[in-house]
Image (tube, rainbow, N blue to C red):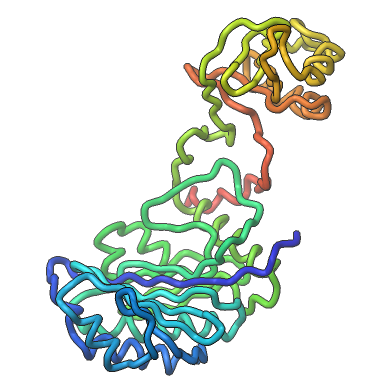
Amino acid sequence: MTVDVPTIGMNLDLAADDDLRWHRDVKFFERALAALSDSGLGLELERMDVGKDEVPFDPKALAKAMAAEKTQMIELWTAARENATLSAGGILADIKAYKLRPSRKTLDGLIAWARAVAKLPQGRARVRCGTVYPIELEYPARRPPVSHDLVRLGTLVDFFGPAWLSDRAPELARLARDAKLPAGASRIEDEDLIVLRWVTDPRSPDDVAEACMRQEDWWRAHVDMPPDGGWNADGDRGVYPAKLEPGPPFTLVDRARHVGYRAVVVMPDGTLDGASWSEVAKLTALSQLADGTPIEHVRLIVPVRDNAIAIAERARELGVDAVLYKDGDTLFNVMPAGNWRVVPAAASEPRKR
């Protein structure tokens, strides 16, 4: 697999339960900046954005501005435009970093910064969660895509506040603390922060992508996550035509989106009832209907998913955009094209414990 060299970012959120003033403390932000300096990241901060103005970096002025009685976000910049950010508002404060090159040193430094900041509230607030993540990295994700309120997939490091996570999701907290991690991953835990690190030394873009896949596979094996909207559990994506109406030689046509649909039945020997393969080839070569309606995509509709799986490969070789089947009131595109990967069934076994 080959990917463009990514940069990475980090976020770490801290919050109080109800104290709107907990972070209105100059010392908190002075110490957060000192922790950044001591982290080993080696960021030589030169400029900072305060309001609409970019001014020379001044730690004391920054800490004072952050502790002001208003929502505030201040970005800090190096000469190379690497970035760190402090923000606060309401009960929440967070630290961020952007545009850093992935390496063992960078991950070590970000983790050190996060662990130091996690100790700063001294009981007035607690860490919620955070991550170190690649920016603009495309790696082969699993289908269907899934979501979880507390877990971000595709990261290099996950941060969790033990007390907060135990209150919010006890089973997830147990997993984060105790579940066996895969080869290549490691865990650091103390009373202020749980750190799940998915790669030791990301020397190449492929290392970053493989760490993201390792992290995603582990979480999906241990936690039930619902498919994203428009997907089903089989990994097929819903298709929602604007308006379907007759349009020979197609069974139905979506004129607004320039899509022709042909309904067929797959026979036991693999032949089609409703259109031969040679007819399908003629349909994909068609550029418009007799009335001038453009046709940009051709899709086949079959009765059941097994039929769609049986003919999908050949249909796509002939230029068919998608093979659909109906489930309830929704048409689903079986195994949609994309940068997906197949994960062996064994990857889901830990959840059965």
